[in-house]
Length: 143
Image (tube, rainbow, N blue to C red; front, side, top):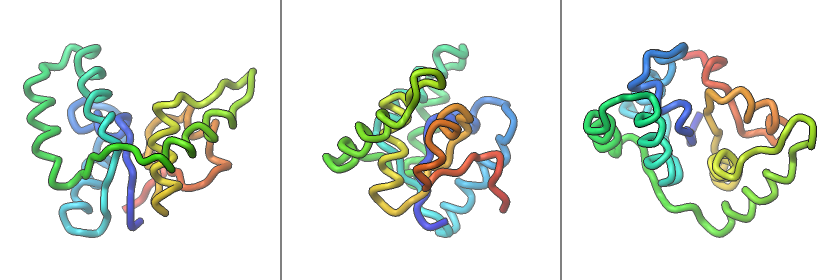
């Protein structure tokens, strides 16, 4: 895979017992084995905390998990080029099917601008943007 950009829908599977949790864990195992480089915009941190709070998960444990994974997941600020690409992505939708959110578009833009692949469990974002390429559904990954 090379460079994998993960969004919060993948990361939360590390602490929520959801379908494809094993695949999310496998991505981090591959990162530990230097088989993939995982990156994400730093907004992932806030999005993960928000999800944990909504789900009633103790934040201390989630913060510890985020901190423990920072050696396998590089979180960084979004570049100007990635912001511009995200604006192009949000214009790709349709009035009936909806438009990608700017947050989802930032993750996807990071993949497109860095010759990486966005790995997401968000089927709605995938459906809206798969024509852009550089995106895989977590459920479809095989290891």
